[in-house]
Amino acid sequence: MKAVIVRSALLSGVLALSFAPLAQATSSVNQTAVDNGITFLNTKVAADGHVGASASETGWSAIAYAAAGSTYDTVQTAGGTDLLTYLMANPPSAAASATDWERSILAITADHHNPYNFGGTDYVAKLKTFVSAGQIGSATASNDDYFGLMALMAAGIDPADSVAANEITYILGQQKADGGFSYSTDPSLGSDVDDTAAALMALEAAKFAGQNQNAFDAAVAKATAYMLGTQNADGGFPYDPLTPPAWGGPVSNVSTTSWVVMALTALGQDSGTPYDDAQAYIRGAQNADGSFPYEAPAAGDVFDTAPAVTALAGGTYPFKVYNGVIPDQDPVASPTPTPTPTPTPTPTPDVLGASIAPTPTPTPAVLGASTGVLPTVGELSNYLLLLMALAIATAAGVAVYLRQRRRLRNQA
Image (tube, rainbow, N blue to C red; front, side, top):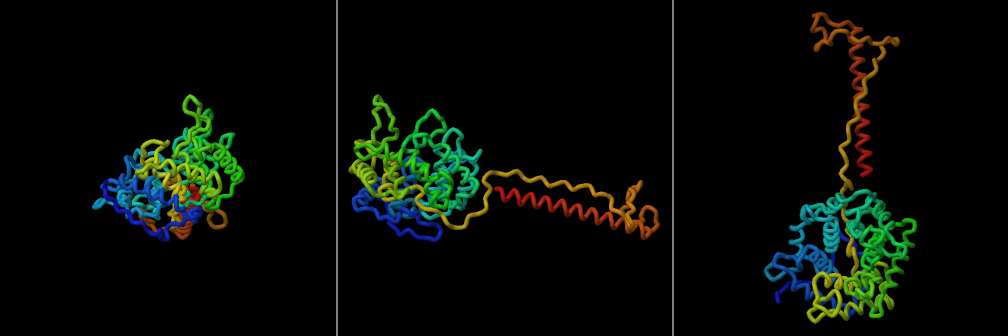
């Protein structure tokens, strides 16, 4: 077994604000399961600092370490690179999806780091490049919207921000008649428990940040009722409660149950029979090596162990909320405003209302240069009045242009 150095540290720093549900202490039985889960994750830490076999497993594991009380700079193999250094040096690729940036923001903020400048990358600005038609990411998926709202709230974005507000409206519009949510926008697909739990955590994060939208509480209550109504007698939850018997029926699994426990924690419903039974189910599925499988009994893996550890540690998504300085950002790239053309000046009246007649010959570059004769007082007065009119018109055009730029900036 690889030796992994993980020093538990007090969570501190002015850049992050504890997410409210974390006030509850982890029970002793849960703490043992959490410690054993971390022991398993330690065996999956690579020399370069990543955890597991993918960026996804690394991100979810990072949040599990934070929930268990470890900071990323303390997670490393003996002589190896720590998890924090790895994350800072490895942002999602240019071909990454919206969910890659969303998961990364949740991981960054969980360890008290700035998502607007992490390793020189503005993760929030990157996420906002996926905004289209009032939603984030794929137009045929809705799970990237649940995680999108979580990420925005983790980044400290005001729920009244246009991107966040539109996302909340969009998510509420995805709720099914039974109260649940799906991963897809396909109306023929029914609700599933995983995505309902994710949607609930996203909406609760917005509520925690101050969101007070009409029908908000009703939607949350309906989704919670759907979710709790799927609990099995063993205390666990199935992915799809309508799974036909031919496919095994609505069997409980650790992953879904972990998501439900985190959602209940976010809702403040972290006590009572449904919550206790769900936690007991998760603990009962843990293997001797500390890992958790998707369905017990089976060998465990990183992907299912990470959320199980976070859930048993009393965590939720988002785990922490950034409350540092938020830079001005445009949600979507705005076109460069076209300067308003300077209007053609109307001939300026001369003394007593006489208009200046256009000069049939070109204006000399220097007054009097073409004729050798100095201009008269009347001619000089006309030139001065024309120059004043041009200056006024130019100033008016510049003012219109600047107002347009300010308007576009305020809309961003």
